[in-house]
Amino acid sequence: MPAGAPTGGHVLRRAIRGQRRRIVAASLLGMTHQGCEALVPVVIGVAIDTAVATGDSGALWRWLLVLAVLFFVLSTCYRNSARITEGAGEQAAHELRLELGARVLDPRGGSDANRLPGALTSIATNDARRVGSVATVLTYGVAAVAALVISAVALLRISVPLGLLVLLGIPPLLWLGHRISRPLERRSETEQEQAAHASGVAADLVSGLRVLKGMGAESAAVARYRTTSQDSLAAALRAARSRSGHEGAVLALTGVFIAVIGVVGAYLAMRGSISVGELVAAVGLAQFLLGPFQLLTYVNAEFAQGRASARRIAEVLAAPAAVEGGEDTPSDRAAGHIRLRGVSLGTLRAVDLDIEAGSLTGVVTKDPAVADDLLHCLARELDPADGTVELDGVSLTSLDPDGLRRAVLVAHHDADLFESSLLDNVRAGADAKAAAAAVDPALAASAADEVARLLPDGADTVLAERGRSLSGGQRQRVAIARALAADRPVLVLHDPTTAVDTVTESRIAARLREARQGRTTLLITTSPALLAVTDRVIVLDEGTVSAEGRHAELVAGDEAYRAAVLA
Image 1 (cartoon, one colour):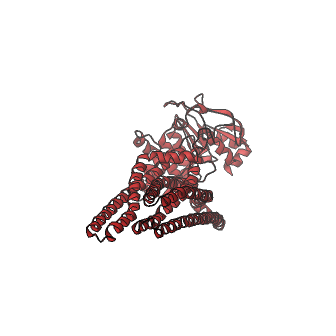
Image 2: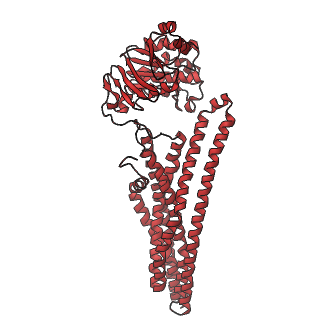
Image 3: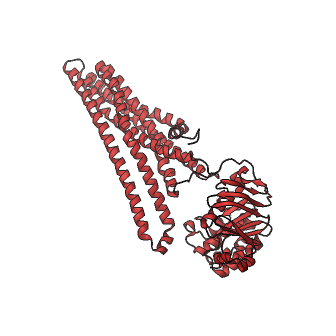
């Protein structure tokens, strides 16, 4: 973990500090509520001694009025404390979700390393909620401690031995409760990890459901999820057993403690050291103490689970960035000259490329891993292990990733659509001022205007999640339109027409060249229709440049090239 990176403790403290005012206000109201509750048996005891035992009806009415005021105050404080407390927890969870969202969307990347999207979603929902709950239960804990102190003071006034018994007995009970919660904390963390993994696997399977059905691999997918779900269930059951054991052990200790108070109080009453009313007050206070102790048990369990969740959140927030450094911003009028010098990353081996500004260049490779590594370099999702990638003579490592992506747009093959209208999807990456002017040409160049005409509400038709209401070819056309509408100086398209029919593909190829006239465009594809309109084609074989030339020349003179693009 990098120096200064947030830890679970930092996450918890920030969540609490952020809601400090709400927590203080709710704690004051909670202490008032618990104080009034603790005074109820004391008032009843006094009423017995001063009114019932003496037969004074006037005193009895006065003490009944005092009880009514106590109940009014404690009920009012409880309602307002609960409202403020719940608001503090929800606000703390909301702020954590915003922080997690900002980290996941950070252009430097890295937060999603070795994590499925569903796992990140689980962390941003379940774990954030549990950490937010710590801000909620903290006020309960303060109120419970206040109740114990008030009860101890009241018992001291009734009897010094009873008061000392409570004051000396509470710290060991709290320490034992904390020790007992350790296994629960460990098992809660395991439970959350397994639940997040199960959510990630489920999301992964749902997103690829159509592919799985086409391959006839449903049974294997079901078996995979069954195993993951069973692991998650086993972890949840272990955590539940640990929680029930924790609560049972603490309640048993509390019960013994309260019984001891009752026995000592009865003994003192039999000896005449305290009156009948004081005995009633002492027994009432002993019974009342069960509530604060149960509350502290709940608070301890929530803290244990909150600490486990805070560590998981901290792991995401502290995840090292995939790319470091880079403060400069490319010029708004970038020419778009791309140059790779001795670039090595993954499957790439000392690749040298020179993509002239304003050119339409094709890149052919039979290995998908080579294409992925090249895309990672051009989008600066990863920096090369060796060599440099330059934009207009400036190394990409010196450029801010967000600023770079405003000059270089890498449109991945598996780019998803959003659950909004077709029109909103197309103008998602376009500058607000230029969006209106850029959308229509982009729709026409990608043949997505034909898709819009087939929809019930045209381009205003709302698409289903990830555009699943469209066919594969229709989704690709909309994705191409979105990339074109963004109008970046450099556009990199990866296999943009694999699901489009050949007639439409040829039409898109011709229009694409016209739409990108004068701006740098890189097509990583094996499509003959797209490669035919390029100025030059570069062939990557086993991670290095093996040939280059015009498409027609390579088809005529390179057998390996023919096999790659015409097979």
